[in-house]
Image (cartoon, rainbow, N blue to C red):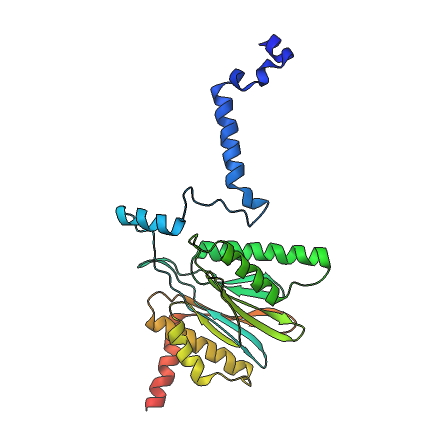
Length: 279
C-alpha cells in the first residue's frame, strides 16, 4: 500500500475501497440536493417529467393522499394611516389540523412584510429567498428593493416553476417613495397591485365584511377593529381557519405587531356586541 501511495495508484477509482466510493457518491448527491444553499433558484426537481401529471398518476394508484386541501385567511388593506395585515394561525393538511400557532406573516425586513397562504413550505422558502435578495440588493446598490420589484421576483420564480406543484398566494406590503404599496402574487405568476386583498379559503367571508365597511379614511382603531372582525367571521365559517388572529400595522417608519387575539376571545367580544344590537 505504501508503494501504491507513492506512485499515486491509490487515487485511481478501481483502487478505492467500496466504502470510500459510496461516501463520495453520497457527498455528491448531498451537494446536488442542497445546491439551493448557494443559489435559491436551483431547486432539485422530481426525478420524472411533468411532475404535476406524474404525481396525479401516482396518487391514483397509491393509498397515500398527496393532494392535501389548503386553507387559511389572510387580509391586507391600505388606509390613511398605513397598511394593515391580519391573519389567522391554523395550519391544516386536509381535514387534519397540524398547528394552531403558525406564523403567517413573514418579516422580510424592517420596511417590508409578506403573508402566507397555500403550502407552508413553499411560502416559507420563497419568503426567505426574498429576504436574501433584499439584503443583497441593499449591499450591492445601497438602496432598498421596492415592493414592486420584490413582487416581480416572486412572480418570475412562480412562472419558472409553474407546473412543478408550487402552491402559494402571498401579499407583499411595504412603503415606497410614492406611498404605501400592497401587492398580491401567487403560484400561477399572477401579480396584482391594489388597496385591499383577502387570500385563502376564508377570503370570501372576509371580503364580505371588508366590502361593507372599508374606506380609506379609517382611523387606526377602526382599521384594527375591521381587520379583526373580517378574520373572525372567516374563522367562524371556514373550518380551515382558526387559532390566533395576529394583526400588524405598517407605516412609513416601521411595522409593529398591534395585537394577537384568540378566536374564542374575538367570539366573546363580537357575539356580545351583536346581542346588544339585537336588543
